[in-house]
Length: 228
Ligand code: ADP
Ligand code: ADP
Image (cartoon, rainbow, N blue to C red):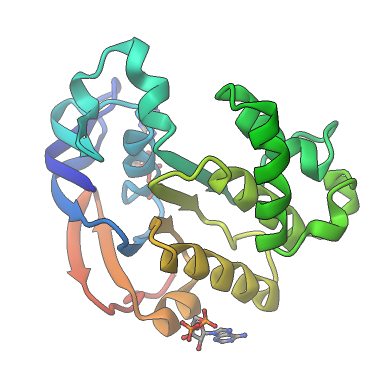
């Protein structure tokens, strides 16, 4: 599903953010990406999304070599991935329904398909009753649910989550984790960067640990493994 082959990323100022990374993530995997600040987690995620390109090596996503892809085909690649951020990034002037529908409008989905799919996804994330509300009228956990709905509404192969529980209280964070796990159980590959030690330790999923741009650990049923 996702393969990184000898991937190195050196930024223009000479900083080596990732150094000779080799990782294979299979379809349906659930991967926690952990490591201290500056370890290279954001760079890793940005490379999957082709927001930055590696200076060396190859990245293959769902059979497509991202590294040599023409600019014209980048949107097609990004469609394979749904992204969720710590700060939700919802459109404040659109309702819950409109935020989710917008993700389908961008890919020019048929209006009939949008009217069918959006209520189904909102029901799945438990927000059917709130579809006419605006983001600022929702709790943090509800806003993150909207952002997850938006990320999965086009059926991506991969859900990428960058600190999705970072702005949430522990109880709400667990609800969001259950939702992400539920999406994973339906077959979506999940890659989640996080500092949430307790969540990583309890969930017992694959843990890839980065330090100074290198993979220092890659364990099935792993733990967080260091103190923040
Ligand atoms: P993390 O997400 O784990 O905190 P990052 O991927 O943000 O790590 O950063 C990895 C390294 O790359 C750090 O040393 C950081 O300072 C550096 N870095 C990140 N982005 C840039 C950039 N745009 N230009 C130069 N250096 C960068
Ligand atoms: P399952 O895979 O059995 O359906 P869930 O999706 O409900 O489990 O939860 C995933 C993991 O998170 C489980 O290991 C569960 O024990 C743990 N978990 C769920 N809610 C909480 C909570 N509020 N506090 C601590 N751990 C929790």
